[in-house]
Length: 208
Image (cartoon, rainbow, N blue to C red; front, side, top):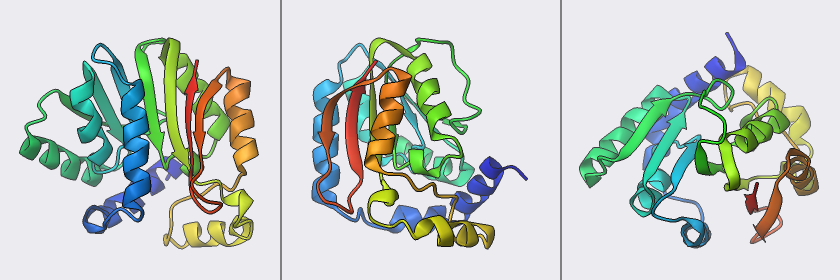
């Protein structure tokens, strides 16, 4: 079984509980939504990677021409589609895929969103390069990422054990500086950077 398949099984298993769990920091989440909306335009085609149960996609879809939201978990997407149907969001498309196996032509999106995703991938740098390839010139990459290397380095040791036991998904430990270096190396220029606390996710809007 591949790492992506194991991840899909994990998220399928917890999807219903995840959908019922309130956002841990509603004020921070709302700020990220607001900042993102300031960059979105009505003619944009947007991709969201790791969309989960679709809450963020539902907020942003009305502001753009098209929003495609993908996730590895079939159960997460079932819940997302149900929420979209209830909201009458007929122009919002959901598709099952991971970042690694998602296929689309080069330079076909104006913005890519990836929240709480990059630390769950085997190869962060490859994913960031792929996002860069998928974006049109001047396109935006909006990401919010826990950088555990800045405050929870012990997770490098305990994380693999928890993943092997099926208790948690695979989690990569890196610092904010390492993440920002990956973005720069791929050709991104940071336009907005916000981290509301040392133990909070780093929110970045970067431009190709």
